[in-house]
Each structure stands twice: as structure tokens, then as C-alpha cells.
Length: 158
Image (tube, rainbow, N blue to C red; front, side, top):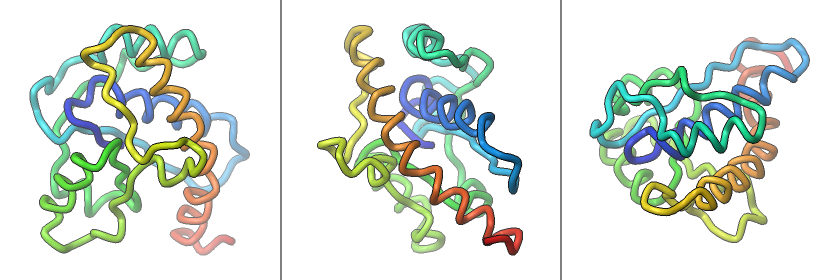
């Protein structure tokens, strides 16, 4: 999961997906992580408003630390999901033509979201974080079957 600073949208997406995966039947291991296209907040915990929004929905992200996305992430992960088109463009530039099939927008998995971009709530109020989580929850519902398929293909399961 990739956003700009890795303190709002992408840790919320990482946290919600990880939370949902704890309730799945035992199957192939799925690794979830998040990063930012910029290193402004490297090492910082998620924004307190993001942490509060996550807690209201029953999961916690305070243990996460911001980091900048690196080329090795594109090699390591089967999917690299951007929160918006600007971050997707950054990932394509970072990829330099390699691994581009792994780069997608998170909201591709939420066809009824009404947008392709998860809005950045950083300069807004608490309601912006709730909107982000509404979108992330929709996307994760659509993403889970794709992850199961990818994980199964890595282990030879169907």
C-alpha cells in the first residue's frame, strides 16, 4: 500500500487489510506492508487522527512506522497498490519499466467507490479519515479474492 508520506492512507490500508486477513481461513501466507513515495515522515508513527479512526473501527496501527518505498519493494511484492494517480505515476517512474504489471490503484478493487483516488485527509479533519476508511474497506473486500488467487498460485494451490 503506497501513499505520499505513509502516515495516513497507506497505514490505514495496511492495517485494515491485515486486520481482515486475521479472520480468513488458514491458507497461504499473505504479507502486507505500506510505504510512502516521499520520506518526509520516515520512522514516524501514523498520524494520530489515522490511529484514532482505525481504533474506532476495531484495529490498531500505532506500531507502524513510516518509510519510503524502494525498488526492492517492487521486486518483493506481488501487488503494489497506490492510493492515487500521482503515487502510481511515481511508482511507474521508480519501476523504470520493470514490474509494472504489479502496480495498480487500490480503488480498482472498489468499482462502486465513485473515484479512482483515495483522497489525502492530511490537511482536513476527522471526517476525511473516516472517508478514507470507507473507501479502503470497499477496496479490501474486492482485493481479498485477488490476494487469495495470487497466494494460491505462488504455492501451487487453487
